[in-house]
Image (cartoon, rainbow, N blue to C red; front, side, top):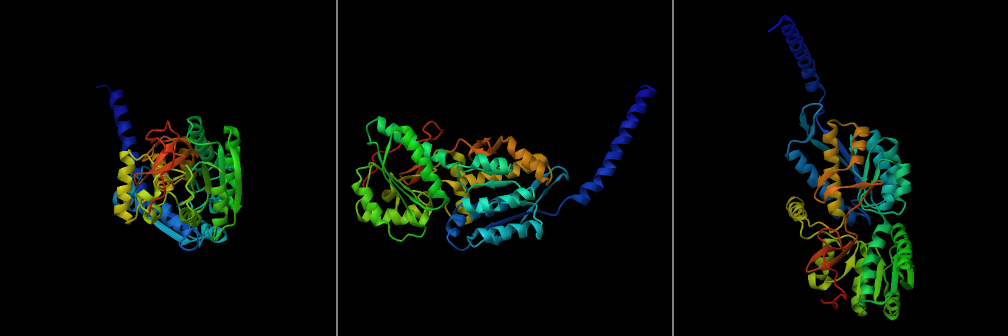
Length: 410
């Protein structure tokens, strides 16, 4: 060995010792005791059933799973760091949600935020998330202005897609049925007069026109309506083979109850939010909901989805819904993987990582296009006790749609 080589090796050794000596105290001193995650979710008010079905159980399950594994790996410190949670009840009020999120940011100084429930609430808090540099993985917000909002709030993600995505998916299914002679081209549609109903109905009108359908009835009703029998009788007399209702959970139950009473049973019966929830099949039973359609759906053959649903039931004691729940959990997997890729709590770097996509989740490899999740079911149908994805028909796990819907059964 030459002197030069010895010198080089000694220099390298000295440098290595220097790095180790300098790094070791830093790792021990700077590692946070926990990653503090905050969220404001409705525990009371009309949004509480949705938040308590689609989001809170997934948040709690994910935190338990992460902490049971020792925490999230932060490579900067060479250790796993557990999660602690700060939660507030937004009382189903957008104003209260804004105050709660501001408190989480400025007083609790949380490291990361999870989103609230519903389109209106997510949009209300979006400026705060954006102002303070927090990524917002929205899993219950549905809007056709996602492209526009993504330019205003570049770290806001719309993981449930857009109203047009769901309307186009539905009318692709209807167009196939029309072509096969299973239904006529008449549509009867009602919608709740707020953000979800207005945007969904607007998207449906465009899709109906594009596919050659005739809207023989197109009516809206106020939030909180307690009797829809007059509108449903109009649907019955309309001659339409397809009934569409863009409804919220209480309305979805009301419509389903009153349709049975007046024997409204068109070949396609499509209702809104709540149709995919466990309480829905719990109320009517598997035979009672057979053939009813709505937004969302799952790949009932997916082992990852089956394991997730079983784990959710075991940990939280609750069944998942068949739409937003799996997206909510997948968003948490995305967030964890983005943090671990970065190796520290740096929100700007985490946001940049989220945009890259390529996350392995229960939904498969997640793809983000223009801040929106693509490749999920937009049309689902109850089939043998499972709300199966039926559209897009070429998506993995899609089942053939049942048309006409069977008669109502108690």
